[in-house]
Length: 198
Figure 1 (cartoon, rainbow, N blue to C red):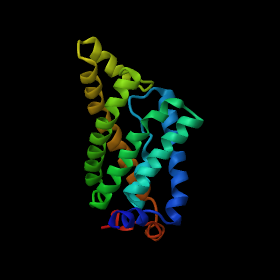
Figure 2 (figure 1 turned 45 degrees about the vertical axis):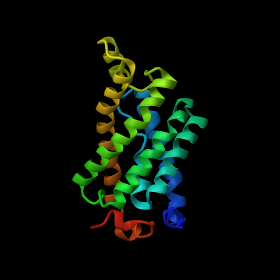
Figure 3 (figure 1 turned 30 degrees about the horizontal axis):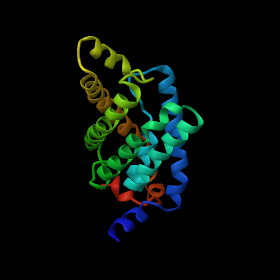
Figure 4 (figure 1 turned 90 degrees about the vertical axis):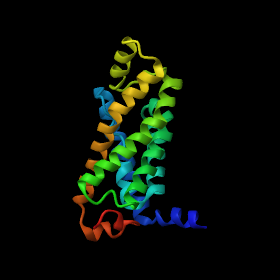
């Protein structure tokens, strides 16, 4: 019963309005970054935004739907990464519940924790579905590490633990900046405004 109540708490009308906006943010920014072959992703800003103000379950759903919709409508390469997006939303949401979304330096801690989750979940996908090399710019680092004699799993893990913290800290700080730009009155309409207020 406690689990069901926790899930229900994340979803109100504002959450249902915000999720499609967040998905659009994720897909548009993620697609731009992928086309530019940048060594970061920045495709979870919307997910972290929803997770912070609506909760972990809403964040997990946003991340999952983002990658599924992105994969089905725009870029099929985005589809297999939905478990990573799910964990990004879930971990960011629980960090926000724990008060790690109230100041910029706590948001950096959130970014590090989200990065650890993302790197752990993404490594098996990258190794077993893509042979370690994906369409992202970070694959240049993996290719370099493979050329220096590292085995595939070590090269992918090393790349993920190098790139993910930079990406997820930036992602969390961008989501935090968006939240700080919203009025307190507007934020109060979301399920978990206490996550981002002192």
